[in-house]
Amino acid sequence: MSKEKHPVPKGREEHFMGIIWSMVEPFGIEDISEVMDFVKLLDESIARHVMERDNNVSPQKKVHTDRVKFISIFKARYLEFTDLEYRRPVTPADGKLIHQANKTLQDSGFNGDDYLKWTYTVFLKENDKFAPGTLKQVCSEFFLHKFLYDHKEERVARQKAELAKKEGHALLNKAREMIRSSSDQIFIENVKNLVKQYSDRDIMLVQFRNELNKLAKNSA
Image 1 (cartoon, rainbow, N blue to C red):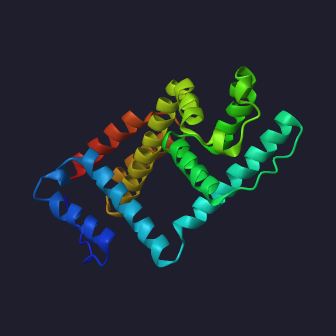
Image 2: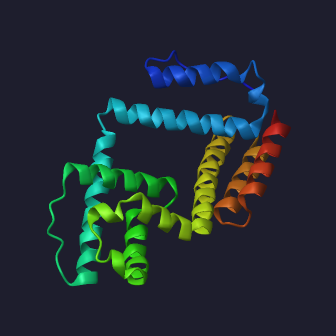
């Protein structure tokens, strides 16, 4: 496998990735295509983070946007459920709870819309003693864990789907790299054909991974 050069890292994140790359060759990781795909995916994630940091794209902006969206959906659901407007002020403490709720949901493959729809069309209808629900209540661990428990199978499926999506992205990047670094037209056409089959969903992720790794191994 041709050795890639990686620049001397500047910050903590780049230094971390530099350490990872420094261990690839000594531990023989470069010969394990499946693992290398995820090393490259990690490298891309670090690069994206550094780009956002260096261009002053604050993570707090997304947190704020997600929080505003959650409040908006909550108030709309509350109005629909009660025919009353939710007039309680949203405190900084509420804001922290909303952020934690959003993170819990996102880590499980859901979003505020999924959750609040269930809260007001299923849970509160079946549990009138909690109705109509305050912002603090719907962000509570009890409400959130009940939602995640009731959607356990879907949660596992969504998490697997997200992992498969990331792996598919890494494999497509690998295929593009294979095409760029080769002058063998037959090899290039074989890779392109494999990418097309995967993109058209004629083959599944496992077959795409196996066939791509087979092509890479045979060309080494």
